[in-house]
Structures are given as C-alpha cells and as structure tokens.
Length: 317
Image 1 (spheres, rainbow, N blue to C red):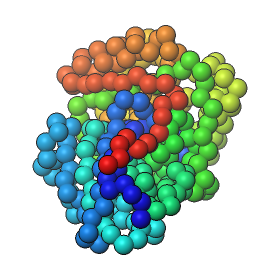
Image 2 (tube, one colour):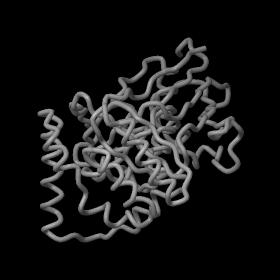
Image 3 (cartoon, rainbow, N blue to C red):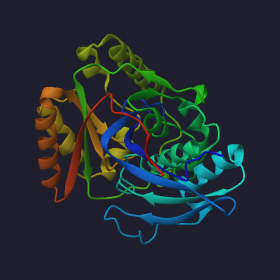
Image 4 (spheres, one colour):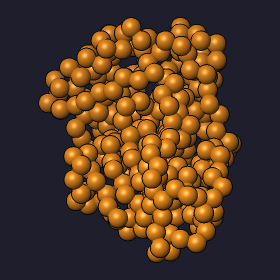
C-alpha cells in the first residue's frame, strides 16, 4: 500500500464538443475546476464523507451515496480493479457550476480517479484512468463520450471519438489562441438535452459537418487562423440547442463583432465559448458578458490558453 494516507487532486472544467466536434473534441479550461480528497479508510469500499458547493458549504442536494455520485462511481471502479486492503473515503469540493455545460460531472470523476490513483501501490499512467473516469461521467450524462473527461484528464485540446476509445489524441493548439467561456446564471441538464436531439440528419448536413471538423483539425495542425475561422462551425447540434439559451445569439454576435474566431455552446450549454487571439480575449469576454447581462442574466467568464493543464495531484498527507 502507498505511504500517502490522503491525496487531494484538482481537475479542470472543460469545453465539450468545441462546437465543431460533437462528442469528439474537448478543451480544458484554466482557473476553474473541482477538488477531490481521497483518504485511506479501514472501511472497505469507497464512501463519500461530504460534498461542498461553490460557496464552501455542504451541498444541499448532491448525493453522498456511492452509487449516485460521479466521483465515487469513478473512484469505486478504479479501486475495485486495482486497490488492495483498505477502503477510500472521498471529500468533494465543487468549483464548476452545476449543469453549466462546463464538464462539472467529468471534473469530479477525473479528480477522484487521479486522487485515488495516487493511493495505489503502483499508480497507473494518467491516460489509463480514462475508462474509470468515464464510468462516473456515463452516470451523469447518459453516454460514454469523453469530450469532457479527456481534456480534464490530459489538459489542452483533445480528440477523443468513441471509435478510438480508450485512445485519446492530444492536438496541437495554435499558439497565441485563447478560449473565453461565459457562464450565464442558468442550468441545463446534459442528459435531458441529449434526449432532445434529432436522431436523423440529411446527407448534406453530415458532409458539411465532416468538412468543418476536418478543416478545424487541419487548422490546428498547421496553425492556420484563417482556416480555423472558416471551420469553427456547427450546423447540426448548435441549431437544435441555441434556443434553450435565450441570450445565445446575442452573445455569439457580440463575440464575433469583437473579433472572435468562432463562438458556440460549450457542451449542451448554457455556457458559451469563443476562441480568439490572445490580444482580443479581454475584449471578447467583456462583449460577451455585456450581451448576456443585456438579457437580464448574471454571468461570469474565464479566459484560458488552449494549452490549459489537465488534472494533477495538489497535495499529499
């Protein structure tokens, strides 16, 4: 057994889909995420001691039942496969707003497996934690897509389509590009939003979206800003979800006027992201916030490089 008795890990929030790559692309967000502490316990299995919210207080409704929390589900999957002897007690501190479209459930799952992994006698390489973190994410969102888990785990921009699981492919991020994420004070359930999506699409839509995704990947590889601006588009999912966020169109228009390279929903929303050159990031964030508040919503925003770090062990006791 490892000599550490308690490990605290941090996992960042993330932008799911990155507009152009539904369920296939994810981007880590710097400066916001979840913390999970894992402590060895004499009681077998995985348990949750407490869950605290954004205000630091005990959360009034997030579950502490092992089978009903993304962090404990993920941790239990890892511990059952590789743990020995004792059990593990978790303490969860939420830093990602709930149902925000910023990968909060993924951040909790990732932080928990990174913390528990550090307690193992022989810790796994970080990429090998993906299947265990996905167990928790599946509970929350109803699918095994890794577009939030992968960037939260690895950091940066990650290509992670289901057909390649468990392989995750970190992509070259164009230098000098930032993401801006705006969170309006409202909530949207990812699982509910997925159920509302159409099940069939035209060949024209399919080909158009494939072209945008291929072009976006090439733009990142080549550092081609002009191509990125042309291809950061979503003609399939965004049109179905945009009306669920009343301020979306105004926020997107404001971002583009402020010289963003592209703008779309983060995950299922309500958060909205834009990619822009570093020098434009502050102006883009301000423009997005003003447009959002013009609809009567309070909001906050984060600016981060496309190379934002992934999960890491924060402390050991």
